[in-house]
Image (cartoon, rainbow, N blue to C red; front, side, top):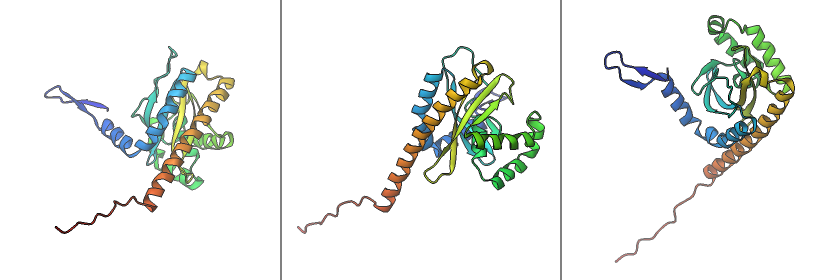
Length: 224
């Protein structure tokens, strides 16, 4: 868990999941940093929770959750939560962005945990969801894990087109009618483009620095 308690002293300590989340945040700090303004805008516009998720091997980890102001919320996904790729809107968006052979490798690796922990979401359903996501250009989780918790998501790509994460929005089912899904996806795509543009700028800037390092001016020591 995020927090663990020592049975002897009863004191609390950061748990394994907190260290995993901290490690991911450190490595992906650039992505989190450039996504923060977009997450704030998404939750302000929609009044619903928005999320940044990243891939961790064959899993998806929620790196950040920005709360909305709508009083009735879904709590199915929190920062630090981990699910197999394909489970949840952001997770599905990342899986669908992978080549077919990699999708199959991920599903094979997660087969046992999907059967044991997600019996409501068989592998064949995830395959169909991948195809639908690719056709639509965005992912939809129509309450597959928690019945009244719906979500939409879009993948984030790096400058070389690799999927590096996903933005998503979650809300209760009554706030995810088809017309509103279209509205939310529009917001997500707009913000995803902004994040990707900033990532491309960062990539270009770092590449320029590597190719043209700043040299310290030479100084000549005068003899006394």
